[in-house]
Image 1 (tube, one colour):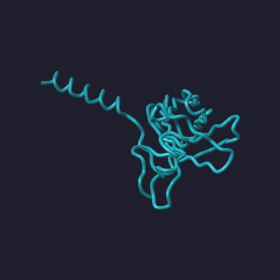
Image 2 (cartoon, helix red, strand yellow; image 1 turned 90 degrees about the horizontal axis):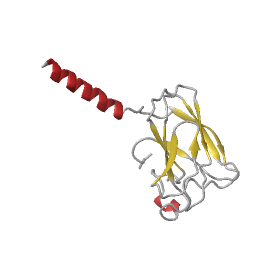
Image 3 (spheres, rainbow, N blue to C red; image 1 turned 45 degrees about the vertical axis):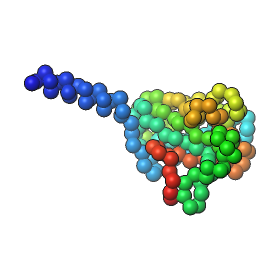
Length: 151
């Protein structure tokens, strides 16, 4: 009986470790910078809640509707000019850490050129281009989990 409990405990611990990620809420990250000059597009966010490795945050430049949710027509079609990218923490991060995302504005039709100072960032679906940052008028949104559909 003791052996069975040990095996069950080990399995539960292993399963929990595989799926471990920090659940974030409003105010747990803040955008620290955004550069859209075309030559060196990048953005950065600061961690305001400790995060474990494997935590994911979704970033998108889709337009937000005043009625709630992202405008599906703002993309001009699938992956045309607006996209979604998923960042995954590569290590545990403490409050105050700044994560930089470099070159998120790769050209359409090319492999992703985006990199992050910690972890990875990839477009989703994977065949979509990176963000396309114009020199002005761009917004980036961050969320975790399913795509928001209301205010």
